[in-house]
Image 1 (tube, one colour):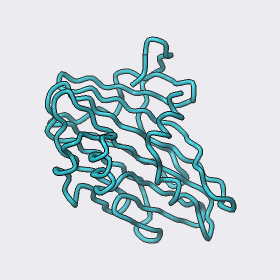
Image 2 (cartoon, rainbow, N blue to C red):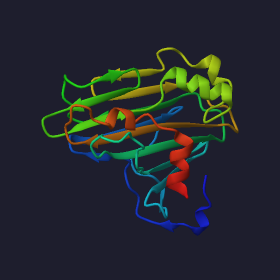
Image 3 (cartoon, rainbow, N blue to C red):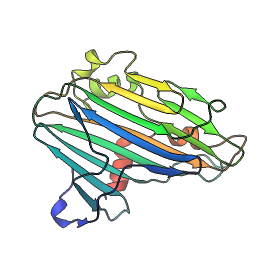
Length: 214
Protein backbone atom coordinates (compact mmCIF):
# COMPACT_ATOMS: atom_id res chain seq x y z
CA UNK A 1 0.00 0.00 0.00
CA UNK A 2 2.79 2.43 1.00
CA UNK A 3 6.58 2.39 1.38
CA UNK A 4 6.76 2.18 5.16
CA UNK A 5 10.54 2.63 5.15
CA UNK A 6 10.07 6.39 4.71
CA UNK A 7 7.22 6.77 7.22
CA UNK A 8 7.36 7.80 10.87
CA UNK A 9 6.41 5.11 13.38
CA UNK A 10 4.00 6.07 16.16
CA UNK A 11 2.56 4.19 19.16
CA UNK A 12 -0.20 1.72 18.22
CA UNK A 13 -3.72 3.19 18.18
CA UNK A 14 -7.17 1.63 18.10
CA UNK A 15 -9.41 2.36 15.13
CA UNK A 16 -12.21 3.98 17.16
CA UNK A 17 -13.66 7.20 15.77
CA UNK A 18 -14.70 9.72 18.43
CA UNK A 19 -17.95 11.55 17.58
CA UNK A 20 -20.21 13.90 19.54
CA UNK A 21 -22.63 11.00 20.13
CA UNK A 22 -20.06 8.43 21.23
CA UNK A 23 -17.29 6.32 19.76
CA UNK A 24 -17.63 4.28 16.58
CA UNK A 25 -15.85 1.02 17.38
CA UNK A 26 -14.54 -1.48 14.86
CA UNK A 27 -14.12 -5.25 15.02
CA UNK A 28 -12.57 -7.40 12.28
CA UNK A 29 -12.51 -11.19 11.87
CA UNK A 30 -10.46 -12.89 9.16
CA UNK A 31 -10.99 -16.63 8.86
CA UNK A 32 -10.70 -17.87 12.43
CA UNK A 33 -8.64 -14.87 13.55
CA UNK A 34 -10.25 -12.17 15.67
CA UNK A 35 -8.03 -9.20 14.90
CA UNK A 36 -6.72 -7.49 18.09
CA UNK A 37 -7.96 -3.97 18.76
CA UNK A 38 -4.43 -2.52 18.67
CA UNK A 39 -2.24 -3.04 15.61
CA UNK A 40 1.25 -4.44 15.58
CA UNK A 41 2.61 -1.40 13.73
CA UNK A 42 1.37 2.17 13.23
CA UNK A 43 2.73 4.95 11.04
CA UNK A 44 1.68 8.60 10.73
CA UNK A 45 1.23 9.90 7.18
CA UNK A 46 1.94 13.38 5.85
CA UNK A 47 -1.81 13.99 5.45
CA UNK A 48 -2.31 13.46 9.19
CA UNK A 49 -3.85 10.02 8.59
CA UNK A 50 -2.57 6.77 10.07
CA UNK A 51 -1.51 3.46 8.54
CA UNK A 52 -2.04 0.55 10.93
CA UNK A 53 -0.80 -2.98 10.24
CA UNK A 54 -1.54 -6.42 11.68
CA UNK A 55 0.38 -9.51 10.57
CA UNK A 56 -0.74 -13.12 10.74
CA UNK A 57 0.67 -16.25 9.06
CA UNK A 58 -2.24 -16.34 6.61
CA UNK A 59 -2.99 -12.65 6.08
CA UNK A 60 -1.77 -9.07 6.36
CA UNK A 61 -4.25 -6.41 7.36
CA UNK A 62 -3.56 -2.76 6.54
CA UNK A 63 -5.89 0.03 7.61
CA UNK A 64 -5.61 3.67 6.53
CA UNK A 65 -7.76 6.04 8.57
CA UNK A 66 -8.01 9.80 8.78
CA UNK A 67 -10.07 12.89 8.19
CA UNK A 68 -11.18 13.78 4.70
CA UNK A 69 -13.05 16.90 3.63
CA UNK A 70 -16.40 15.96 2.02
CA UNK A 71 -17.45 17.63 -1.21
CA UNK A 72 -20.94 18.91 -0.47
CA UNK A 73 -23.18 21.42 -2.27
CA UNK A 74 -23.26 24.98 -0.99
CA UNK A 75 -25.62 25.63 1.89
CA UNK A 76 -24.91 22.53 3.93
CA UNK A 77 -23.62 22.99 7.49
CA UNK A 78 -19.97 22.15 8.17
CA UNK A 79 -19.36 18.39 8.30
CA UNK A 80 -16.44 16.52 9.87
CA UNK A 81 -15.67 13.16 8.27
CA UNK A 82 -13.29 10.36 9.17
CA UNK A 83 -12.77 7.48 6.75
CA UNK A 84 -11.40 4.01 7.55
CA UNK A 85 -10.18 1.91 4.62
CA UNK A 86 -9.47 -1.73 5.45
CA UNK A 87 -7.32 -3.83 3.12
CA UNK A 88 -6.84 -7.58 3.45
CA UNK A 89 -3.89 -9.20 1.64
CA UNK A 90 -4.29 -12.99 1.71
CA UNK A 91 -1.07 -14.97 2.12
CA UNK A 92 -3.25 -18.07 2.32
CA UNK A 93 -6.93 -18.38 1.48
CA UNK A 94 -9.04 -16.47 4.00
CA UNK A 95 -12.41 -18.13 4.47
CA UNK A 96 -14.29 -15.11 5.78
CA UNK A 97 -13.88 -11.34 6.05
CA UNK A 98 -16.17 -9.79 8.66
CA UNK A 99 -16.18 -6.14 9.70
CA UNK A 100 -18.36 -4.49 12.33
CA UNK A 101 -18.70 -0.75 12.94
CA UNK A 102 -20.84 0.24 15.92
CA UNK A 103 -21.80 3.65 17.27
CA UNK A 104 -21.83 3.05 20.99
CA UNK A 105 -24.92 4.49 22.64
CA UNK A 106 -26.69 5.35 19.38
CA UNK A 107 -30.30 6.48 19.97
CA UNK A 108 -32.76 3.64 19.48
CA UNK A 109 -34.95 5.67 17.16
CA UNK A 110 -34.80 8.74 14.97
CA UNK A 111 -32.57 9.42 12.00
CA UNK A 112 -32.30 7.78 8.61
CA UNK A 113 -31.34 4.22 7.72
CA UNK A 114 -30.31 2.29 4.64
CA UNK A 115 -28.88 -1.14 3.91
CA UNK A 116 -25.32 -0.10 4.68
CA UNK A 117 -25.67 3.25 6.45
CA UNK A 118 -27.55 4.95 9.25
CA UNK A 119 -27.87 8.38 10.83
CA UNK A 120 -28.30 9.03 14.55
CA UNK A 121 -29.67 12.39 15.67
CA UNK A 122 -30.03 14.21 18.97
CA UNK A 123 -30.66 17.82 19.88
CA UNK A 124 -26.88 18.32 19.93
CA UNK A 125 -25.50 16.53 16.88
CA UNK A 126 -26.08 14.40 13.80
CA UNK A 127 -23.82 11.41 13.10
CA UNK A 128 -23.90 9.19 10.02
CA UNK A 129 -22.02 5.92 9.58
CA UNK A 130 -21.89 4.11 6.26
CA UNK A 131 -20.04 1.97 3.75
CA UNK A 132 -20.68 0.03 0.56
CA UNK A 133 -23.76 -2.12 0.11
CA UNK A 134 -23.75 -5.54 -1.51
CA UNK A 135 -24.65 -4.21 -4.97
CA UNK A 136 -21.90 -1.59 -4.80
CA UNK A 137 -19.36 -4.31 -3.99
CA UNK A 138 -20.65 -6.44 -6.87
CA UNK A 139 -20.14 -3.52 -9.26
CA UNK A 140 -16.61 -3.04 -7.92
CA UNK A 141 -15.94 -6.74 -8.42
CA UNK A 142 -17.13 -6.70 -12.03
CA UNK A 143 -15.01 -3.59 -12.68
CA UNK A 144 -11.91 -5.13 -11.10
CA UNK A 145 -11.78 -2.52 -8.34
CA UNK A 146 -11.21 -2.94 -4.59
CA UNK A 147 -12.41 -6.56 -4.31
CA UNK A 148 -11.72 -9.87 -6.13
CA UNK A 149 -13.49 -10.54 -9.45
CA UNK A 150 -15.19 -13.69 -8.13
CA UNK A 151 -17.04 -11.70 -5.45
CA UNK A 152 -19.64 -10.62 -8.03
CA UNK A 153 -21.12 -14.15 -7.89
CA UNK A 154 -20.35 -14.91 -4.23
CA UNK A 155 -21.75 -11.83 -2.49
CA UNK A 156 -25.08 -12.61 -0.88
CA UNK A 157 -27.93 -10.12 -0.80
CA UNK A 158 -27.69 -10.04 2.98
CA UNK A 159 -23.92 -9.50 3.06
CA UNK A 160 -24.52 -6.24 4.94
CA UNK A 161 -26.61 -6.25 8.10
CA UNK A 162 -27.74 -3.25 10.14
CA UNK A 163 -28.88 -3.70 13.72
CA UNK A 164 -29.56 -0.43 15.53
CA UNK A 165 -26.28 1.46 15.63
CA UNK A 166 -24.21 -1.45 14.30
CA UNK A 167 -23.28 -2.31 10.72
CA UNK A 168 -21.86 -5.75 9.89
CA UNK A 169 -20.29 -6.79 6.58
CA UNK A 170 -20.02 -10.58 6.11
CA UNK A 171 -17.87 -10.89 3.03
CA UNK A 172 -16.78 -13.88 0.92
CA UNK A 173 -13.55 -15.80 0.74
CA UNK A 174 -10.34 -14.02 -0.31
CA UNK A 175 -8.18 -16.47 -2.23
CA UNK A 176 -4.45 -16.76 -1.72
CA UNK A 177 -2.57 -13.87 -3.31
CA UNK A 178 -5.67 -11.68 -3.67
CA UNK A 179 -6.70 -8.58 -1.78
CA UNK A 180 -9.99 -6.99 -0.77
CA UNK A 181 -10.84 -3.55 0.54
CA UNK A 182 -13.76 -2.31 2.61
CA UNK A 183 -14.33 1.29 3.59
CA UNK A 184 -16.41 2.84 6.38
CA UNK A 185 -17.07 6.56 6.74
CA UNK A 186 -18.20 8.43 9.85
CA UNK A 187 -19.48 12.01 9.50
CA UNK A 188 -20.98 14.44 11.98
CA UNK A 189 -22.28 17.98 12.20
CA UNK A 190 -24.56 20.23 14.19
CA UNK A 191 -28.29 19.51 13.87
CA UNK A 192 -29.85 20.90 10.71
CA UNK A 193 -32.99 20.49 8.65
CA UNK A 194 -30.76 19.17 5.85
CA UNK A 195 -27.57 17.78 7.42
CA UNK A 196 -24.81 16.88 4.99
CA UNK A 197 -23.61 13.85 6.91
CA UNK A 198 -25.75 11.40 4.91
CA UNK A 199 -24.15 12.51 1.64
CA UNK A 200 -20.70 12.67 3.24
CA UNK A 201 -20.55 8.94 3.99
CA UNK A 202 -21.16 8.03 0.33
CA UNK A 203 -17.56 8.24 -0.87
CA UNK A 204 -15.28 7.43 -3.79
CA UNK A 205 -12.84 5.21 -1.89
CA UNK A 206 -10.05 5.47 -4.48
CA UNK A 207 -10.11 9.27 -4.37
CA UNK A 208 -10.21 9.41 -0.58
CA UNK A 209 -7.38 6.88 -0.31
CA UNK A 210 -5.26 9.06 -2.60
CA UNK A 211 -6.00 12.09 -0.43
CA UNK A 212 -5.04 10.27 2.76
CA UNK A 213 -1.84 8.71 1.40
CA UNK A 214 -0.39 11.51 -0.72
